[in-house]
Length: 246
Image (cartoon, rainbow, N blue to C red):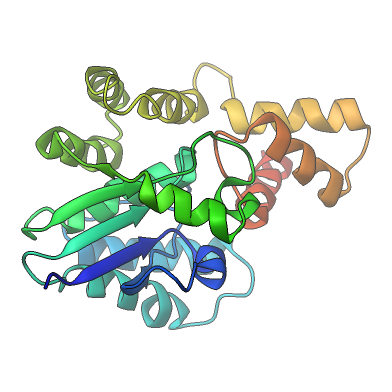
């Protein structure tokens, strides 16, 4: 009998995961779409991420990143050969970049990979679904193919090669139509020629439209206008600080 694993994008999904679905759960607790991702090995990347998160996200203590996030990523690398692995990731950039890295970790693991995602993209993602709807997502899981191409996504993202990233996404459009919008959102987020990047430009416009500096309404409106990024409050707070410091 094959081992079954479910890699979940965040603790929120774990808390609502249907009890009727069996298998070992691993949580990918990261937001690799925000901040530096330098590192030629996973260990080097983890050090980069720990430094970035401790410097930019409030509430993180020394050791939190390695005790929580790295420990779970290392569990992914020890999944047994022949296992069935379901990857529970949504269509937004936050989820997609994490998915690309997870696929990178699984590159040398000979297992059957499936993608589980909501039927349609909304700003609520899996969080907007009830138990029955989550089970239905699982039943509709998609067996992953073109793994060589999918594995290129993380490497191009990590190297900042937006042109190659977009080319691969478009090449895979028939099987994975959600890739191109997420990659385009990443490309649009890159500052250039005086443009601060799409997320920050959107925040500037929201502050003008709402005529407020209060975080809560700004954050809610950002989630409505830019659900493709999938950012949580920590990421939006950092962007607002970046805007203030600019």
